Length: 491
Image 1 (cartoon, rainbow, N blue to C red):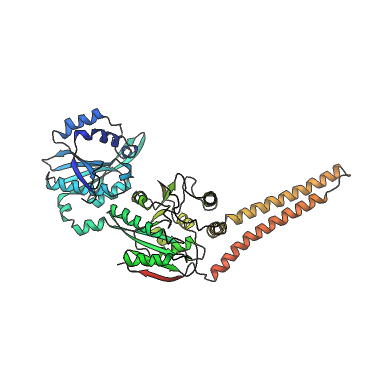
Image 2: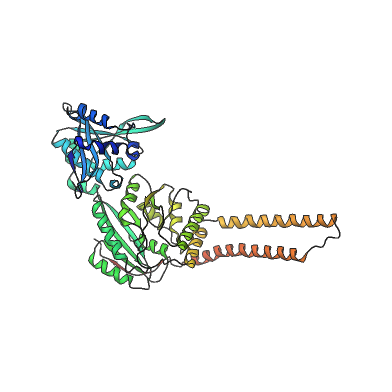
């Protein structure tokens, strides 16, 4: 079924099953938390599998025949026609590819058609949102009035029960099952000087999404008035691929405005944003989607090491500090240009129509239910970054003037502290004159104070002026972006 098939478990699979079950990720989602041993698994085979109380399969990839996990029915009661279902994906790189849902469907078909069971039930931790959604897609339904609490390492966790009944399963038409498994993912890519790279990025997305069969996809390419022939390349891609939409902006509005333009054209349940240069790995989008399926509203890719120049890395650090101080970003949250978000977050972001969009600020003001996943960051193969020091400064100003009033509060604090320091210095000068009448009040000290206070006042006025200027431009309805042309042949 799909990208996987099931085969019966063999004794030779013992080593793999023990390793999988001892994987911290797998063990965290099992009620039985003790470490597995080869001896314990062999006892399971002798006492459960061989007598027919358990039927266990190995989940294998169709293309490679690689074993990636296991699915089983335990406590099979052939008289009552029921059994308990269990599954685990043991290989970390197989998570998020829909293998769990596909394996569940294949296993349920075996249970109802071969073993002739009438009902299959399972237990799952209530906080394991991703697993619950996968089971629902396979045909399981929540048993509303059945729930229990278990203690795991001294922490209470709620366990819920789900079931799939043969008659209900048989009533699910192929169309309904296909509809359940077909969420639409919209990829939005701002393009600038990417005529030589965007084609490869689109091809990588296509190849990756063929493996994620539980999703459909579309791609929105936004040309930010690139000086090369980027939009000609986009036009050619749109002519060949009906799932690609091309948007051409009338002038260069910047990456964040280009994203906002792309958001207006998305149709998907989940929106993924990535770069046009191939440095953000489209082939790892399954990790972001899997984290979204766990219940998060937005998921950002996190890089152990960014393959950027020292200038760009410095800019990223300043941007990270600014978002944490000014916008209240959690310290542990890593922000990048490669992220996925649920549709309602994107809809909330598009309500912002002012001419200074800052995507990170829009996400942070819409939700705090955000997670990170680790992905690789590639070296740039062609071209250089489109960000200059001027563009980075403009981006930072967008962030802290459009979404925070902290700079004004900082200006107030600095002004207050400076005024207090001036008063204290004045008192100190008077006392010093009384104590020592011969002391000469220096011209240098006076000029230092005047220059310092004058500079501080100009800085504060500049910050206030920046806010007032942006208010003025917003009141004049300056456009966030202007679309010159749109190529959209999507069905």
